[in-house]
Length: 89
Image (tube, rainbow, N blue to C red; front, side, top):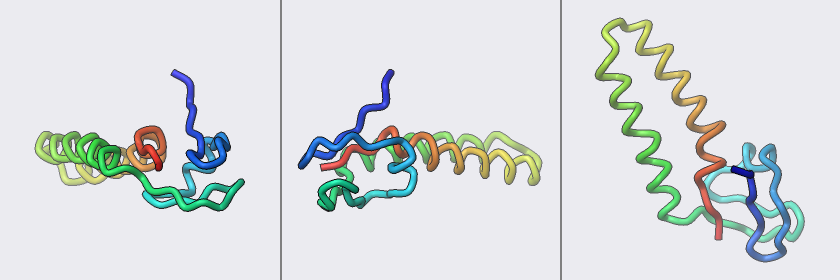
């Protein structure tokens, strides 16, 4: 699956690095248009983040294990999954 995110105003192709620096609201580097993540993509990311997060916290007995696994999941979620899931309009 190819990474393909473009500005809906000028068709500028965003790099993955550009998306890592942005969140739910971002500006296109080419045309400076403000782009907002769609509500549906925010809901999908929330479910992808929360469901495993809760399962991790319920399934691990040791406190240190919970902290380490939870931190790894948070980092993966926000640095890898969020830029791939959020769609902008």
